[in-house]
Image 1 (spheres, rainbow, N blue to C red):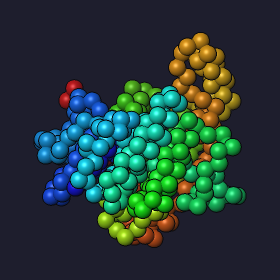
Image 2: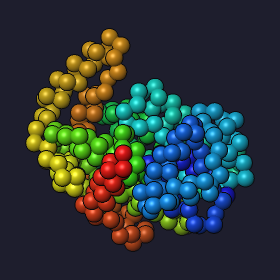
Image 3: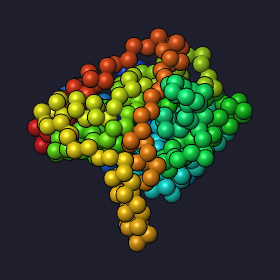
Image 4: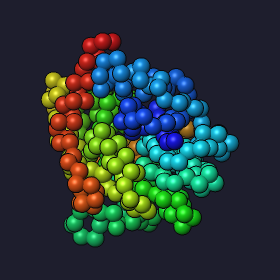
Length: 335
């Protein structure tokens, strides 16, 4: 039996679709039953009528912050895909609670029940900086003394829990996806690239990062879990691209104007300091200094290890963007 935490999220939802006709017994977790509609929307993006397949899985309510609920869903399970996480724009307390303590709970319950293998979905944010100009690879470990986002700190902390488990006889696979592009969850994460471009976003920065299709992420997760690989981590990216090139392609696919207002690092830093003052006054801070650094830095990653291990052929990012944009337009036309 297989357990997928975070079955209503972007990666978890697409992973469920990959298992739709596998014949395997799948348990998917949710915290809010209404959120299962997000998974139905993801299924529908593959083919009309596919949303009904969501009912073919065993859905169980579980909160990774509550060990008794994890014990309930993990009993009799042999393999775990831990996809549940708090996203980048959450508060630090929420990020720390869900990403670190939640993962610690999942790991501890997995150890208690003798789970055979667990795949933890981390992030390239949890990787360290390279020495010199080379690409970042799996050997680059996180620098706690650096300028890091709250999200990066908590994903690194969660990875430490996963590595701890390898010393206690639990086989672990850690995947570090780049920015994951996929259908669904248009109001959060990378989905906002499409929803905001559709409503006329004209701003861009000069930063860059690694990007990957969500379908490639889920395919590789399954492949690694079904392989003999264990106690390793793999960077999952298709291409290193500038944010500007991604936004330009999305605008073209959505038949919108390309972003043409450059947001300089100095302007973003000024905005960040202003928001910090508002945060002191009780308002939510949405742009930290570390986030500015992330948005404006050129950071490139290597996918050599995963290619060598699996001989995987990644989906070109431009092809991914066109497919997602078509889905977004079709959805908008139905509303």
